[in-house]
Amino acid sequence: MEPYLETERLALRHFTAADADLLIELDSDPAVMRYLSGGDPTAPELIRERYLPNILAGYEKWGGDLGLFAAHEKDGGAFVGWFILRPAPEGPLDEVELGYRLRQAAWGKGYATEGSRALLGKAFTELGVRMVWAETMSVNQGSRNIMEKLEMTLACTIPVPADMATVEGSEHGGVRYEITKEQWERQ
Image 1: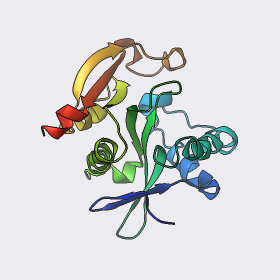
Image 2: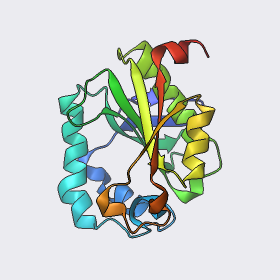
Image 3: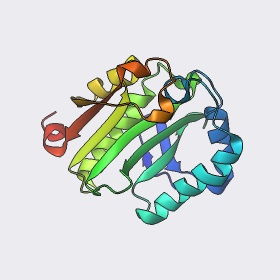
Image 4: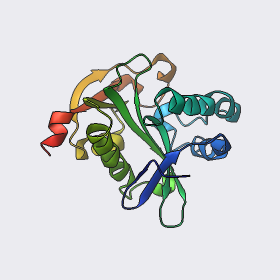
């Protein structure tokens, strides 16, 4: 399968129906899920029956340009996690969310910044995107650091979704970062 996007060390590709086990393994790590579910794993049947079909439907909906992308190391092919570049469910196509979820083994290697930077470039130069946003919990300093490395600007604080009310740090709420095409071009 042709990569969707390549960076110096990563190849991003569309997920396929055969990739459920990669997602199940990723979402079963309590450290990966710490700020998403309080460390609880995502049920495998939920990934197989709902999440993966929705990911695949997204490629259809957005012509393959937007969605969730599997990331692998170019050297050796190890799965490192995923990146997301997609509009909100009912949002405009020129305002897209940037996100990532990486395996613990891939943490601290600069992959989140590298993959995100490449997606920002593609969004602003090829996909007609006007603004990219990203959200995380206020206490998730790791993700906040990446957003700041990308020169995204803290736009506002946001409430944590009700289903995350029991997650550690949820009482501090969330944050939304943004970067416009004009801001990106000035970097």
